[in-house]
Image 1 (spheres, rainbow, N blue to C red):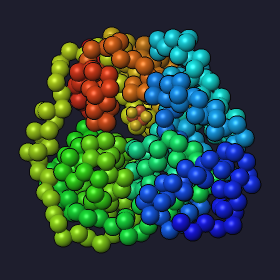
Image 2: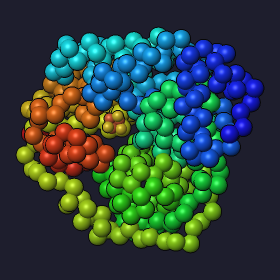
Image 3: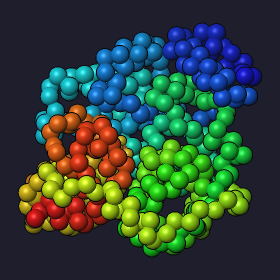
Image 4: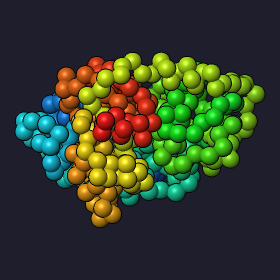
Length: 390
Ligand code: F3S
């Protein structure tokens, strides 16, 4: 790789231990992927924050690299394993909380903003079309690349941290225009309307094309929340980090010759397959983290109602605080439903606590089964709420 003078100095230790180690990590990755150089970034987003995922080895790594570190660009965090202010509400033990808070403190000390959300684009980690960033949460990466027009690879937690500390990332993959061109055209011959339709479509396309970039036709309208749910599903079931939707997303692409049709029958069939249980004891919404608009909808559905099952709404601290001011939090909490702020149903240590989970997110459905061994009922948001209050 060709490094400029400042990057060489970083590698040679002129800027201290953390910068040197970070540059070593980035050069090693760059050489694996045959990057010719580094590219400056304007922001970073770090996943792998929950103590449930990091464990003590992860804390050791963070302690080591953070000794003399400071991030050079705006850097935010993915969800933690608990609500950082009210973990007892979600049944999290004090032992777990102690470790989790230690992790957050290490990040905060080096200048990382503990937003603890997978939707950094809602809470101040904002960049404009065409800017290079280093994000690691898969649902944020695909949203950033596809909907905002950012340029980012899907970083691992350590490489995103290294990018934050040095302010650059190796110039390969989705940082290069030639890798952002669609390789397959998806013709949707189905009515894609609600959150579940978009999640199912993401799953079907992901399973068909894996991590290829696709150009999708046949979608008439898609809100920010539906694009968020669609991208999360596409990334989960196939591994893609970029999609184009005709007339909706902003990136330019050549139109590929290879075509795949998704029919209405496939959507119906896959919906049937997704749900394997009718009797749920846990309902979880907000994967990726709920937006203000989703919280408003949930509040209107729960107003003056009481929930009879455990219901979590996973969201960021920022959305929660604004929702409080708007009166949504009172309507939701008065019903008995709980906010899982800073956290989510996947990264919180809840294995064994529930048997069957209802959700409107195809990504949450995947991890509820694979990580937590829950059975899953996959329904639109309105039906999930109905299940909670019945
Ligand atoms: Fe976010 Fe957790 Fe879903 S990190 S994307 S709410 S699995």
